[in-house]
Image 1 (cartoon, helix red, strand yellow):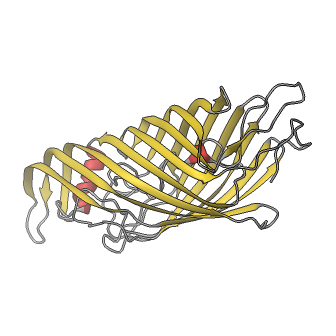
Image 2 (cartoon, one colour; image 1 turned 135 degrees about the horizontal axis):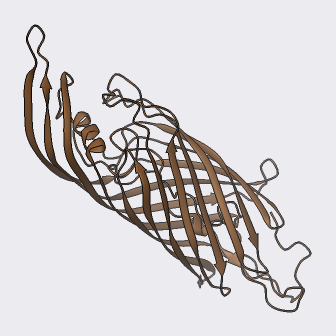
Image 3 (cartoon, helix red, strand yellow; image 1 turned 90 degrees about the horizontal axis):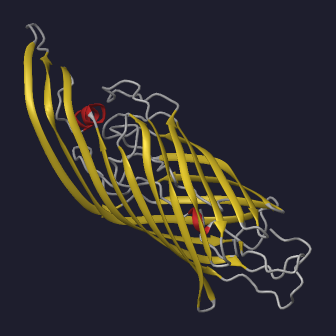
Length: 369
């Protein structure tokens, strides 16, 4: 998911120009590990991992040195009574001794701007290429909930008291997101590329357990996984997939702990020219562990969602650096215990330009580490 560049390999063995060689996952700037927190999974529909975090070229090599990515992210989602009930419990609108039934809808929109500086090390680590990144964001989230709550309030020593209430709640928040550090290693073997990564959540973002809208998630998390990219610079064919798992720490404000989450992100692209590509992106997200803790009043609450959509990218020089602009979007379906809808990303990356060859004869190895 790191910013980088693409370079022309020169002439192919058949005497025609080969497609550009992306030397890092410039397309993989699809998401970050936080977003409008109504929009995800687990506690109240919220998780650390945003599906789509990785995308095309996720495992390809990078140019050593500093690079910078800026991402604008928009999301619009909605959910039914299951997620609305979980949020009513979280913000303290439902007493724990109330046996409640809620018929409601919850919806949210979010707009975030994300800044991601990355440093790629020139010295190999374990035979691969190491990189370190930090993700930060600032933006606005708006959430609304409307419905009818009914149930029975149990009073010790007395009979149950019937209870009915109409709820209409909305709020919004401006603020910073949590800080997300990440470390990755990548290896290359011809058209095959491999990577592993470790990331996590430092919960310092805008969060209040009594508020519907949040940008931070209110607890720490650790996420790790591995990925693969097939990239043929002669044909311009590319396919990437990254599988990862998230362990969530206890939210001390709510005494709620999300279960272990599994996520598979993928991307496929075709370079139509040396500077222009089109393709598709997608993800599968599923919570494989159960939620727990004394603050869990909704049970296991395992969530899932599937997303798919298009992408388009442009590569261009920026002085002596390399520029990359990517547009991508996801439509979601097969959601369970979480809001779903659509999201869109605009990514701009500046990275070191790859050295250009002064000869028309390509090197023996079409891809290097």
